[in-house]
Length: 341
Image (cartoon, rainbow, N blue to C red; front, top):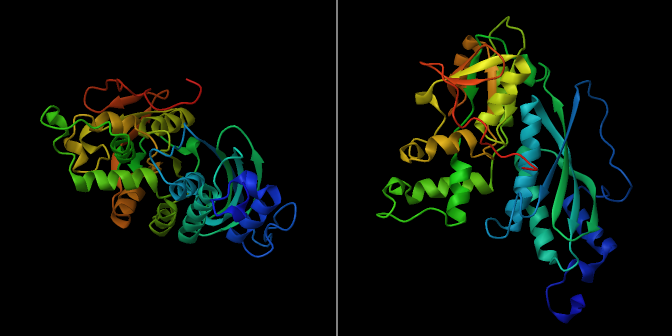
């Protein structure tokens, strides 16, 4: 099918070089003209590199998001990992695209529009990438950023006595996915869902389709750091779920986590749903930061960053998540998403 036929062109119609030329429109002039990207090497701050793969049917589908949403999420997932390492500056992304030849150009264009929109919000440019034909749509994105002047955030830097902090609510993305897949039953047959009103579902769908990488939380951490305190923050993002994030912190730091059930980071309206606690812990794809830091610093951060709350503490241990009060282990702490299972 020729593009001149009036029908929407596919990648087979365009061919590799025309596709690359079109994708170059989303990058600075000349950025796609060579075999690799050049970065300004004058800064002395540490460079951070992260790569994520998004696979159709695993991370996205046409049933739940538009092509622009796919592009936004691809960027946001990688930028979230930069934030989780303590980056204050985004340099850019490289994107490798695999797609069947019958894929419409309009879908690819939408993906890159979403990528560009995210970069427009959080900084950085499209640095380059690659493209290939294949049997399944796939995006492999590499993000590059620079640490702030203070230092990195690492999973292993937690100490017993540290406050555990979440930068925002958890479970909304999972609720949004359920709404998009029409998995939410209709009352009165399911009275526990009566509280899932239109405003809540709209927030949930937005959280699923357009997550926010919490680079602002890194800036807030630096701005409210107590005078004279060393830079020591343990942290990760919660892309695989809150419980999974806490497990990585406890195992990396050689501690247990003692959680307050009443302080779980839930959207107030979502908290009324029977499924809320399970999805808060294991829903995944919320892309908030989960941090362990000195309690005084945590109080300052909570005052400085709206939506942040203390959810518990680190205690001596060996990587177990426990409820405060009776010290019992979390029953569903291993229910988060993992690949290959």
